[in-house]
Length: 209
Image 1 (cartoon, rainbow, N blue to C red):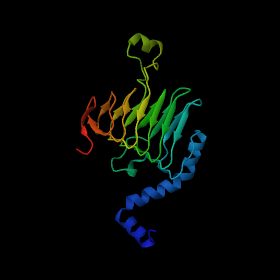
Image 2 (cartoon, helix red, strand yellow):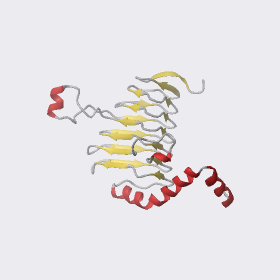
Image 3 (tube, rainbow, N blue to C red):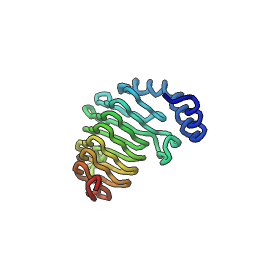
Image 4 (cartoon, helix red, strand yellow):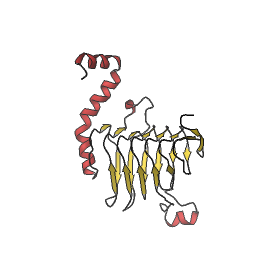
């Protein structure tokens, strides 16, 4: 058990962390109400630093496991997210399903069909994970329906780490234990246990080599 002296010392050495915890605790009742109002079950051990933006279609599912950590206000992370975490399901039947011990700073997860994320996944600051192009490529289709872009499910395995400012696009599977380098654009499947980076992201080497 951490003693009161150790807590005071930690607050003295890293006062911004103490301020973040105080702000988190003050905002906790409102944030719990927000999740309840949006129809998202509150899990065990959640730590939410600033209210996320939740846009859940009434006919869709957002389901998140225990141990969630979301950081939305700039002081909550030295990388200072440019906007709050966004969780959005756009259509009936869409789903965002996230396992235990998920962490994300700023950024967006958006599903028209399905985004499924495993356990112990960490997503760096200001990443975007979206299973839709949003808008059609062809001009005539955009004029007819500007939001009818192509979509395909995304799957991210256990123990994946995604570096800051990465874009994960529709139809992608990222295998368990892989690392995606910062600033990457993931347009194709990434196997398990590798480091991938670039635009488009390509495998550089296996993890641990």
